[in-house]
Length: 361
Image (cartoon, rainbow, N blue to C red; front, top):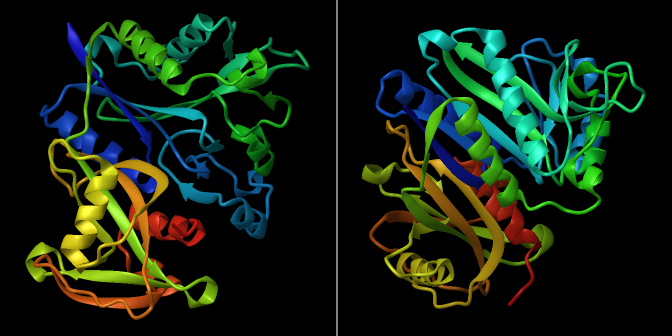
């Protein structure tokens, strides 16, 4: 029996999710890993499939910016869809065996995994042949409403992209688009249908169970390889705000970053953040938890090396003296636009963005 390794990653920035799909896919093609199912949540984004029509994004660029929603083109099938917090996104990375090499069968199997998951929570869902996805209500019924989107990509019988199941999703964000290009029907969530919020971890657990059954596999639970912290050291407010950037030594990449570092054995994230600030800058200051935790792949290693990072901030005085540690060869206090332009990774930029809004200790 094949194995299906299930990774429950929490928040993943969308571009980091694309990279994870690529790396897992390459590792699977090279048979360096078995089949995998990535379960995660994205920040608010609109994604366009190969058949997407731009006019199906009905919101203006200004409205999207106001709502904090980004737009991405993808190589999956389908039109435009929305991802956001409270929605479980699943990326099955499967190398289909010869007996399963049928695109329609694969899509039906993904639908079946979602339908069986919803049934476990008392919701009767099904497919509507003329429309993609998983639905509540019948074809032709005025109350037909989509609860799960499906958009897949297959190459050399390797599957990427996948599905999005609305659990506690902000349904108002679907008003920014014509979901999947379908104007005749609405969108719903498990929360709306059941009348109360639903535990995302509970839904992920059932999804893992049902997809393991649908694809005749033995489940294995995946884990992250490394836990890290990112700390934005700031001083000033508003337009006067400045961010401390550290430049890594050439042998460590030579790029600019915030304070970062790994958790040591037995160390909590807040303890690691406080220690890294002291070691990398010489500052002994209280740290503020930004409630920002996300996952990504470290570098381009195969198999992928998974990292879970926790974001913090530190507020320093304008005349603070910085003493660099051995990992960096320069530092600068820069304004926020400069910091966001220099930082090479989305997670670091998000840490800075959240630090601007954080309360002072």
